[in-house]
Image (cartoon, rainbow, N blue to C red; front, side, top):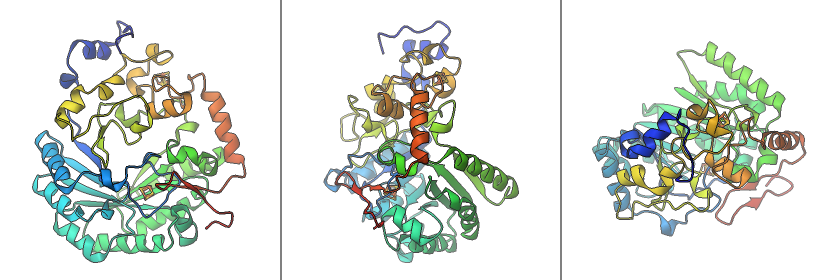
Length: 393
Ligand code: SF4
Ligand code: SF4
């Protein structure tokens, strides 16, 4: 931002002021493609924006193919087909084939419930390289309730089995929160039984739908400590058999995560309607205009030059306490979306940081919610959310 003075010691910010960002930031190696927001599940922590893109706004098959070719040309090596639920698009096999022919490594991030064995086999034949399946628990009672979809858990187990039968590598993604953390040891065992290479133990991050559901999802401090100990023990025991990625919820950290590796530094995603975004929640920040692949600009131009990508790049935009903090080039002030959601200004320090003036208030509020009685979910849907009924249906 032009009104921010850059401290002389801030070499990266100086570089960014003096040179074009094209010289400073290379094209990311992997890109997330949210090809649709449609999804039969209704997870209360869904990372999609609360304002979902309707199917009429989605890029067409030809538009996605053009995007894929362009990504391969500018040096992207890997694409994640995600959503919503990517298999809700009838052209997924065609898109995977196009990506594969363009030389891209392809990963499918799926809830799995719409897949048949035949469809999965068609995707493998089209060149699909990897499958990631999300699980909501280890048994259908709780898992189907969290997903708001009956019969989903059983279907996921089938698809995971087919994935390995087709010799595709499998990642199990388990989103954990107060209502399912007690199942963590069994989740780890389930990943082993399914012959997964990787397990992501992803504690919910609280923006968008998850922020709406924070009181029903926030774990207690004791739960989180136990969870960390379980993961550490399992990592040691399963070395060489199962890789476990572990994401701690921000609220219990003293320093924020380096969100997306820093805004506009290592990552972008493309929304169903073709917006090129610095992170999947970025559209929650009002007042920022994101360029579309439907514009006259190339994707490389949008990445390097667009106002939205440059607004929070580097450190030159920061206010205190980040601006003079020794960690500013390590965590880049945390998450812009969380700063906006919790403070109303995306340029503020992420309140996950203990140095944020709001940290203590927000942490205490979350702690109180974690000990509270709220357990009903607001399910994610195109209507802006539906409160779970009192008997959990
Ligand atoms: S988090 Fe749940 S509701 Fe959201 S896209 Fe994934 S499976 Fe669908
Ligand atoms: S003040 Fe800013 S830069 Fe320093 S640790 Fe907190 S978020 Fe990171």
